[in-house]
Image (cartoon, one colour):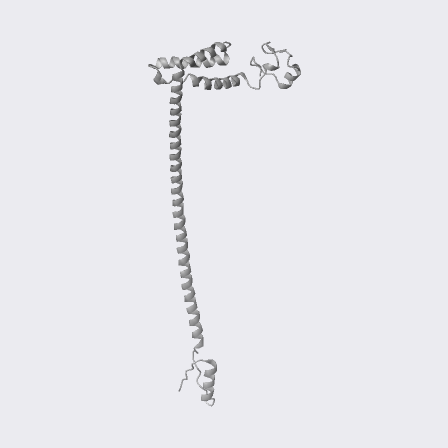
Length: 229
């Protein structure tokens, strides 16, 4: 960017201005330019930076508050005067006169400037403490909210675990009952198999001796029932 508000690429600048004393004319407005008349920032950016710089300095000196004036009109006129001073420092050619005016104001209002600086510091501290307290309050509210959410989640998880455990216990008890029933039926079947349904009548001429019956009973463990004619 040039001081006249136009642009020139870096390579063209280096080619057309090989030395610090070289001079070229702006193709847009014809202004004479040297290497010192170029900046990486536009005029708007430069004006903004200057405005922030001078405003910060001037407001430390011109720091009267609304309570220092009887009417709103007087206070507004004072604010307009401050803005004129800032704008003059940014773009005026009479910066020496403006700076002399500022120094005179400092001399005359030295006491009130110090008092107002203390007031503004107090106000700033109060605002800081207020914001800090509000921030702490919000943090505590958020913490309480998340603690309540976690507690609710823990209750739900505990309830679900209890239901799951109860379901598993119920299934286990039912399974044990089924196993007991199955075992009982199995044993009952085994015992039933050990009981002979009947014993054939002895065929005449083929009577079984008592010794054979006893030996057979001992060997098999069955209880035989003899049927007599």
